[in-house]
Length: 134
Ligand code: TYD
Figure: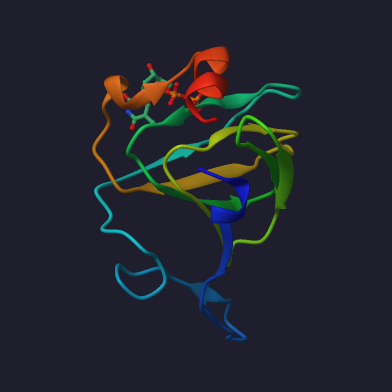
C-alpha cells in the first residue's frame, strides 16, 4: 500500500445561519460499509495516538473539533496531513502505517471504520510492517 492511496474527502457542508451541518453516508461519500465508529478525545498535550497499521480495516478520520496531524507512512515515504475542519475526512486504506500527533486542546478525532474491532487486524511492529510492505 502506498501513501498515494490515502485521500482527502470533502464532506457535504450545509451552510445555515443557525449553524452548519455535515454528514457522511455509505456508498456516497465513503468507499466502504461502516461497521464501527470511535472517537479519541481528552488527549494530553504532546501525546501520540495510533502508531500502527491494519491488515484489512479501512478508516476515515475527521477532526470534529480542534485539530491534529495524521502522519502517514508506507514504510518508504511519510506524509503529514493536518486535519482541523469538521467537514474534511482523511481516507486511510488498509495497509498504511499512521499515527496522530499535535492534538490541540479539546480536539476530537472521529473515526469511521470498515471492520469491527479486532486486535488481530493490527500491525503494531513498525519493522515488521516496513519489511512486509516492500
Ligand atoms: P488503539 O487502537 O491501540 O488506540 P490508538 O491506535 O489510538 O493508540 O486502541 C486503544 C485500546 O482501545 C486498545 O486496548 C483497543 C481498544 N479499542 C477497542 O476496544 N475498540 C475499538 O474500536 C478501538 C479503536 C480500540
